[in-house]
Length: 427
Image 1 (tube, rainbow, N blue to C red):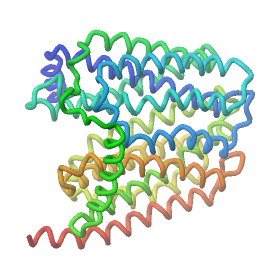
Image 2 (image 1 turned 180 degrees about the vertical axis):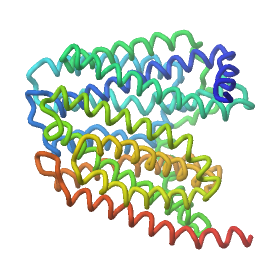
Image 3 (image 1 turned 180 degrees about the horizontal axis):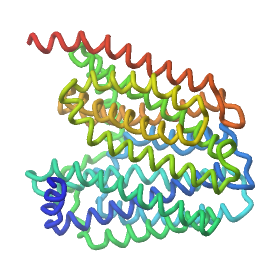
């Protein structure tokens, strides 16, 4: 298989192997920690979880991370990246251990959320640093392959370790034990980074801007310039692709909150059974993500990336109510797979449109804006779901609303993408 062959070639680079180990351990720990948070916030027997509580947790953990994220690169370009991996993972191991202690102790929820936020906030620096360091460990000829395989391997590690977290939670019957497992993996990630020379991953000292305030101010101006760049008529398709993807992310977030409530209160007999069903649903969704990676290149080549987004949105508008309205476990699992495929397929197509439409000098800034839109839409969806969902999670209006949004996305994008295609074909 080409993927296996490419990976075998990359693994000949010693420092690539070492950086990949840091990624696998770091993202594997992230997967464990996220499952631990979901188990504690939603499936603790002593907690009467509501959709409002889930929405609040998402807002606390995602919004600060999203808004600060675009500025993380400024600091990453001033700090030695090897040290970011070392101290970042050490801080996360320490804060995750503190979070485990807070779970055991009788403390206010806000204190728990602050501790959890400290763990997730560092994640932005680690992931961005891993991407920034990659050109330092492979040659230019293999950089594209490395950029494709490394994040995929990291996502797989997060999925596998998340599955391990489910097993530990069900066997040990302790959210704190799962968090400590994540802390141990963070510590292993820090120790693995010590195998990399401190100066190897950069940045080069002579390229660092002398003034931090000037760098931060410049970043804000650069983001504004990126938004203005998107407003040009020739980039209309990219703009609408970002709008479409944000709305589809909104739909996915609203349905995720509904699934959490259904697993907790309606489709199972207790918190442990609910957690097991949630794990199964996430597994089906992950299978859909994988299927999207296989299907989308063929579909985007045949229909075009824009039309593939239309097909995904239209399919979701039809299938989501058909599978969601029974409020039963089996249709829900099928829906998890379908929506995983549709959401990831649309995202791959959106990435392709943005990469091909936006000038190279603006891509980093546009993707920073994309990241903020992606997470803000997710948190906004949780807020809307909190207003619409009853305690048992059964909400026909929410299912119909989400289907209507999917249909609107498909119709609008089908109309809006056409004008942008005509000028480019005539030029």
